[in-house]
Image (tube, rainbow, N blue to C red; front, side, top):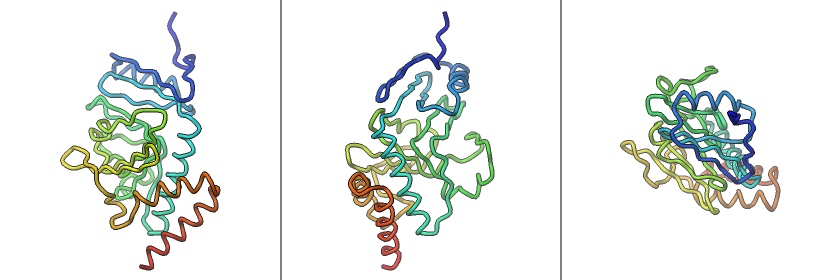
Amino acid sequence: MLIKFKQLDVQPGQSILLKDVSWQQFEGILEELGEKRASRIAYDKGVLEIMSPLPEHERNKEVLGDLVKVLLEELDIEFLPLGSTTFKNQLMSQGIEPDNCFYIQNEATIRGKDRLDLTIDPPPDLALEIDVTSRTHPNIYEALGVPELWCFEKGKLKIYILENGKYIDSSSRIFPNLPIQEVIPEYLQKCKIEGRNKTMKAFRNLVRDWNLT
């Protein structure tokens, strides 16, 4: 009897690893799982990982995404957030669903598009990964050409910049001269203690102060 992927019970914090999955099978699995699901996928040259996030992961994902939005809004930088959109490239046999992603420099290029094809469209300018329930896959983001990757793990924010097709540990190019790696973890922790609205208001005021200096 053929097992349907919707029947698989992936508990929060767990993942399933499948090997020798063809591109056609990968596309079929995506279609079967559908868009309205809690699980996340990563596909790397025949290896498919299906993950189910923990509440801690989802909380940090939402707060980190909101902090990035505040930064972009207060700095008056146009952007388009695309959440956990599935990005894939058949020629590279790779696909990924980031925790969150943003088109910033390339926002105008993809503005108004309902479907993206990474063989002709640019990848998101910034991808966010919260490494609580799953492994981050920087090699997939490298292959897809995502210029900047933020990884939040164990209370620390690491920023990777794409240089000659490889990520290097660096500071943000999108927000140069701002202490992102120090401030973001601080406000993620503050949100747990003081609540979301109070934290976002305080962070917005902080960014406004940066603009005045």
